[in-house]
Image (cartoon, rainbow over all chains, first blue to last red; front, side, top):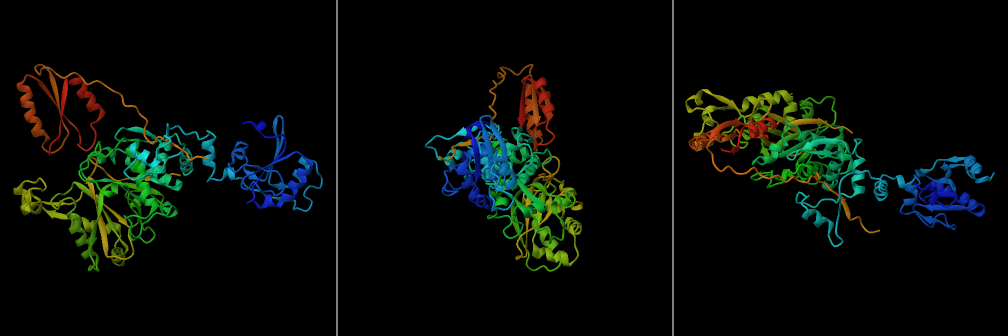
Length: 481
Length: 94
């Protein structure tokens, strides 16, 4: 940190975009006539007009000298910076310069503006350029003739779509989204069980296209999928078409602009699409979970790129998913559910809850196979138009779930192998089929979310995977700043 | 200024360790063979047949099973197999 790199005498840092700098322009003219003065201008080398100005458009000098406010006036000696004044304070400036009536026409005091070198949009780039990023990850240099987007594709670190190059400055900017130490370990990522730092998550979040304010959600989601209960290794390795389905609850969903409404599972919302994508890139790049390798899915589903959404919490008749899983006080939380692609349920005629429940049951029963029961959880998404029917009837979440549970009891005669001309079926002895009735879902295996556009008498069901402790159970994590 | 041409490595940066495979068994007689049932449906039927054939060749057979096919075998189970057996067959079925 060589203050001696500055010329001796008075050194001023200014920017034209600062009203206080404009105010003191005559003062700088006055000083230039009497003292050794060097002026560094951050945004316009022509400012102040008529004076010799050193350009600091790249802000390297401002960054090096830790300038936080403009104007800053330094007194520099051979030994370094002897005195530092920030903003305009007539008394201090006069004392430092020895000119009693300096700026006599100006007000006594004006605060300065922020230096461009501490602008959040500029500072990460400066920190990176000055070797002060503190980032530990290996650097990968591209050859001169390489296209960086093609290079990242060919290095196998993409999910098949272009990724944003995770430069030092972008990763530093991403890390500004969390208070967590970049080197703290978030989780061990399956299948390689590699310890993953906040920095590695941030790198993959940059690649996914996240904004820094999404990072706390990504971190919590990574924690959620890397639990034994969620079982990311199994979710990858299964031949079934499932992946993490992420539901974000709490005020943060609104703050970062997540979509809970029209086209909620679809394209068009940056937060929805990039948060889930970041989690999957962490699993791929840090965990080593790549399709065709550990990921053995027969079909997969497009939601494995990202299936992440919020709920219409304020108008929900059912509370939130996070609350139903034990998160209190509307705290920010993300829930990971292992699921396949959403499937539409159309019922445009029902005007009473019983009729809707019967429709839901008929559709949920067909999940994976109408004759397979107890193996899979399901997530039911109800939209505003169906929601209104339940609200007007005074049904809450527990009423809806218990009624649906009853409606999802299936006679054994319909499940037994061979029934309906289908070899597939639940393994019950044929002679006992007549006296058995089995639930489609395990107790607690139906998870309700409230989301979707305001028009359309529809719901949707997201089929799960092998349910319970032997497979995957939904995991909720509170989102920490 | 030229555009930045350096990125940070998004992977775990591990270098895989190369380990030699244990030498293949030249005969089965007197050897202990582990049969690991991963708990998929009908895996036991397949392994029962395998056990018969291995025992006919003079091998001793130890049976093991994973708690669930949907999760990796617990570390303790893997260790147990490694110290008790000369070779292991891991079976899938459906």
